[in-house]
Structures are given as C-alpha cells and as structure tokens.
Image: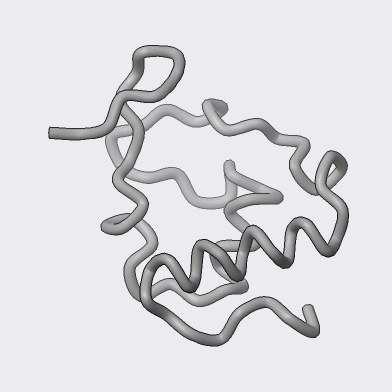
Length: 79
C-alpha cells in the first residue's frame, strides 16, 4: 500500500519514484515539481516555492540527503 500524506491523500513512494535518478533530477523535482508528474498523482500537490524558501546550502543538503537515502552517490555539491 502507498503512503498517506498530511492531507490524507496518497503520495508516491520515493524509493520507487526516485530509484536510479541523479542529483540534478532530484533538485529539479524539488524546485520545479510540475516538471515531471508521477503517473497516477495530481499536479500541484508539492509546494512550488522551495527554491525561494530554501537557502542554496539547505537545498544542496536536502538533495544530498535524498541521494544518500536512496543508496546513490553523486550528490549536489558544486551545483
């Protein structure tokens, strides 16, 4: 079964959705979540202002954390 978000709606399993994706793809999805919508989920669910509300260091840290959590490498440093 899927995970339920704070709104009560199902959300994608990031382990599945982001498997094999690189840091740049993850960064793009954070700052422009409407750029690629996961099939079966509506557009507009993710906040559209993370690029304005996160510092560059916080954004890099978030991307790195997600990449590492997925077991990948090639974090966002230098981006």
